[in-house]
Amino acid sequence: MLAIDTNVVVRYLVGDHPAQSAKARKLIDCNDVFVCTTVLLETEWVLRSVYGFEPTQIAKTLASFAGLPRVTLQDAALTARALACIPRGLDFADALHLLQSEGCVEFVSFDKRFVDTANRLGEIPVRTL
Image (tube, rainbow, N blue to C red; front, side, top):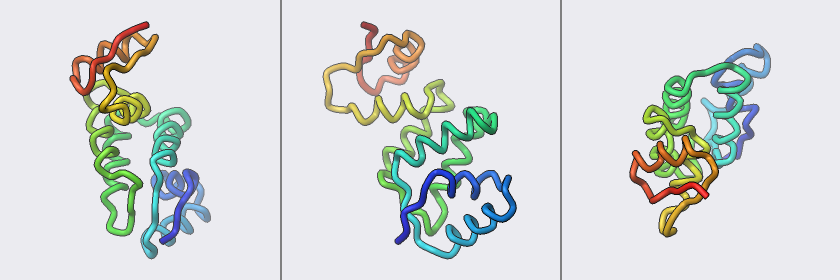
């Protein structure tokens, strides 16, 4: 199994660089690949900030990528849950932070919007500092 970097995933998904995108497609379509959670996190950031993807488009794109037959995610269940939070108003990074904190008494943040949205989702109690 090959571990792949963010730039390989982005080229596969966006196809904006003909030579690199073709290499990324061939690599991912023809080999078993491993994608760690931090690579997905960075991929989401690139899709949003560089390519202007909307949240629902990001969720669909990453979910489709995660479902490819030769792709193995570091934590597929966590990723699926975090992606499901995106259409409900939480960004991917915040969802990952929150969901990885299960078992804690509370999650504390200065970000009021995150606190309000996270509490609506009901995963774990979140409060402002």
